[in-house]
Length: 88
Length: 427
Image 1 (cartoon, rainbow over the protein chains, first blue to last red):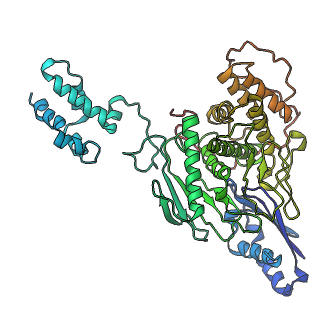
Image 2: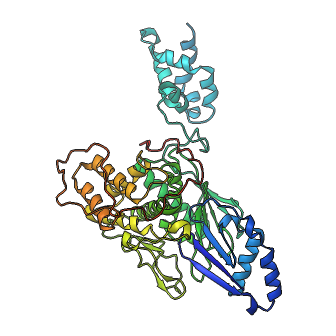
């Protein structure tokens, strides 16, 4: 299982992507539970704001696009975990 | 009629008059004599009341609030304007706040208008560049702040931890410190600060939707005026300017000179980590993507280059004729929130023809620039009408491509109200 976080936009307009292969993590079961717990189906369309980041989060079969102000709670947690797993 | 004799000595007595005239203490006096009475006195044409009439005229002229009542011509300030009674149109009203590394706005207020610089470079840079932005909009275009109504310019620095961004949130400019590895602090570049403030100007004028081609135009307009702020600040004509957006923003570890190049989109950086600057420089390279709100920071390279080409063809200072064409287009009636590149091209050509004449150098430069970047068909040479007289509105430029490359998007929100003085610089 793979989770991919892609951040685009921002004033710089530079797209960065972070990826985690769950089975390669030291705690794959925790990752899997966490990914299952995310509110994938509750995401609604968001309003774009000038120069804010846009996040696209993919974990088959799920894919959501979140405006930066909506990356809160579990989504914020996910983005931070994925970035941390990539040494960020 | 005793009134003139009662008040005339007060107005002309230096001991009372001099210290009070520019202080709030004058207002109780002014409220004693109602404005309508002062106006009647001022209009008296009877010799024995000449002194009273003159005194009343003095009072009317000296008190701006009564002056507004007199002729009704003074523009109303935006409701959010601070220091209304003492503010002179065109003056900056800046407030810089410090988020202290949190993502909470506005943060702690650290510098307001007129306070001396401290030791924090982010505060100093944002304060100075906001001032430079306000000065350019006012001096070159007669625009009084973001809303053309004296709206205070508020900014927050030190937003978030290692935050690699700057943005306009609809009310204020927000600047991160950068991560120190790829990005320096975002206040380091005047063009970035001019860019953010211009998002506010666009919000109050054409209000271009931040998606697809209208979003790329929104971005490009911020780049155009961000570049003009920097050029104006440095006194650089087109030939001497870098035409870079965000110069100095990358750390030395990055193979790149800036975020974007308006002169040569796609050449600002080429780095192992960041990749190559992806901006196209013409419609041939137009990027269709769902990311970045439909590539608003990518396809903005196309109208960015068009502006540069106009400036190059006209020569001199880009904030003069080229800037005026773009500013009048942005604030004029021809743009809609969903205007695309072709509509913007037609609007800038119309504006150039109105300002400088149909077939003028400026008009020709605009048409050729949009043709060079592939937004409109090749321009016949010479132009069909070279009379040099202003044209009627409605020049239509056929798009060089047969169908929109980006599907028209349904409005995401009801059309917000335009700025209270949109399209009417107060001058």
